[in-house]
Amino acid sequence: MKEQLEKIKSEALSRMEAAGSLDSLNEIRVAYLGKKGELTSVLKGMKDVAPEDRPKVGQMVNEVRELLESKLEETKAALMKKAREEQMEKEVIDVTLPAKKIRMGHSHPNSIALSELERIFVGMGYEVVEGPEVEYDLYNFEKLNIPKGHPARDEQDTFYINDRILLRSQTSPVQVRVMETKKPPIRIIAPGRVFRSDAVDATHSPSFHQIEGLVIDRNITFADLKGTLQEFAKELFGPETKVKFRPHHFPFTEPSAEVDVSCFKCGGKGCRFCKGSGWIEILGCGMVHPRVLEMCDIDPEEYSGFAFGIGLERIALLKYEIDDMRLLYENDIRFLKQF
Image (tube, rainbow, N blue to C red; front, side, top):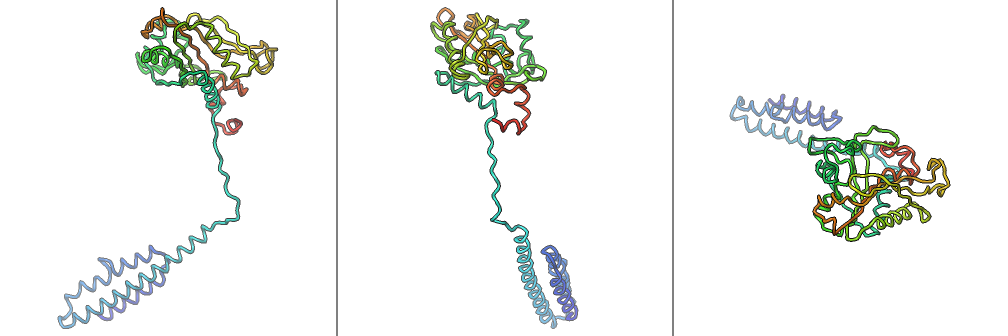
């Protein structure tokens, strides 16, 4: 038994000295001190030792165990220190090197244009409201005087979830929701994403943004609409900007008009930017149709109002002289960092 214990001690100490990592050291511990280890096997064989020799053998086993455990702790500490030193050498930091520059992002051209538009209209006393992008056909068409079978639906063909629910083709449904829940006077703008099944090209996208405006009160006339949009255009494009209204048709306004502004590049003389006309189209507008007011429980004999719709991307393209709408959505940092 004594010879066996000496052999176990010698082999274990030799292996500990040769151990190069904490994993290999743990294997040694398991091999000699684990439940099925060499020293444990010796203890299990104590039943075969003569009763009078058991105290002496037990003492020898305990001495070997204590020695091995002590050597294991000592070797473990040395290996941990060595690993730490190697790690420090690999992870050394040269404090004389220049620091990494923090690259700050900035607003997207659409966001810049939207902030500018909101600033102008909030300054005029308008409230900014939002509504759901997934909308009911009732709000997107029916309550805007566009019943089933109306030709205007073809111009605003959108994405349907079922017969009653769709992705809104305009932010005008927000106006209807406000008129249903809030009595006049009303003065709001409703920015948001809209959807139409258009092919992607330089001026069209199946997803884009609109800003709709609505004013409802007593004695509101077309003159109020013209004055509002004229002030808006001058604030956005410059004090020398002129505004022109052209008759048009929208189902939810009557009368309706398209609005042009004098070219802010050439001052109305005619250039490549305005295609030689001296004018640039920016939005559509009109007086709220009496039937729309009636469907929202507002008496058209007592109240009147006007509405307008602005394409956010169109404003961004004009303001920053961008000739392709797709650039706004390609996330090319070389393009976006210019703004």
